[in-house]
Length: 148
Image (tube, rainbow, N blue to C red; front, side, top):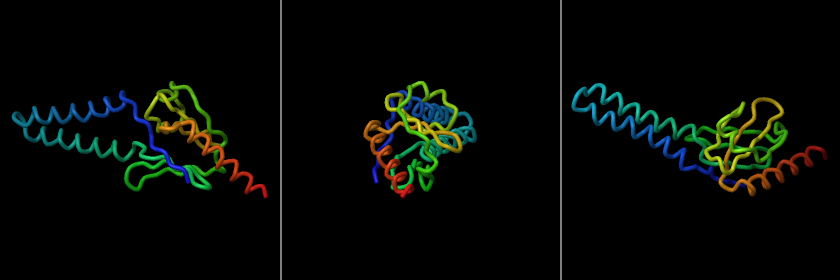
């Protein structure tokens, strides 16, 4: 098994932090004018923080038969090797414009997992080249095992 963490770019951290800071500051401003509105803003801040924690990738794992994208809590996405057509490094533009599932958090280390069935995935492991090498090696080992 191989495991890597996602790479988070500064621009993404600023956007996510900005969203949380905006709703928190609005809540603090409203606390003196309208307590109910302030509580709603604090609730929105908490909800957004939990949502970001739940849907942003925490780890990328390579097992003997699948790739797993670990999200927050019990959430994870498994992609069996039998459903992977190819894995390749792609253009940083695909982080923003891609017809598929985007779990890329960086424009510097972008990988695309093209599936045989279903939409592909765009991810950004911190050590892209090592992750790509390990994944291609695991996929080729699995395919050689299934042929014998």
